[in-house]
Length: 236
Image 1: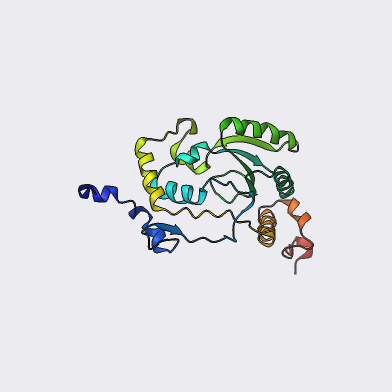
Image 2: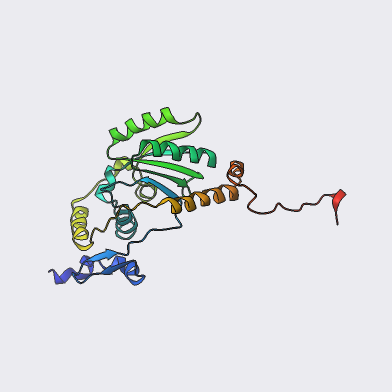
């Protein structure tokens, strides 16, 4: 152990807030595992999750706290679909279910994304992504945008043009240490029928709140009573 560079070599300090909040914990083996749980208030319905990606660790921890784009994320190519209404979002959901590939769809609540709704299909190479893009465009109703991008949007905002991303030997050395430190507790759990129903109900609430008139098609009655409005001929 290099005791002269302990502070520089300390990879626990960056995630101390996660440990203090109980999101991660040390086991008796001296390694770290996450508190596994299904999140109920999510904007996404997951059609099928990838078996090898560890997005919750790679993005939420390695990127957010260690300031790297994990090497595994360099091989993530996303076909992005932009439904314009809640009705189109439900249609995209049905298309993704028919394809049964790693994908998700839902409402966009990130301020950094200029869209209300999104669908995402995950591919393992640029060529695979381009092929997926060609296929999905054939299935989409006219006017719905689809494009291919690399990695997560947040990566581009922080590190710029994805064509210029690279993995340094120093990053690979850090990733090896992180792999040894974190226990891989990935569980590709199904959200289940009732949780998906709840998430989709939140889609409709979101669509209503954002002025999407198509949301009315998915309500038996209005969410809230209409305003009482006044003109000069009907004042109290």
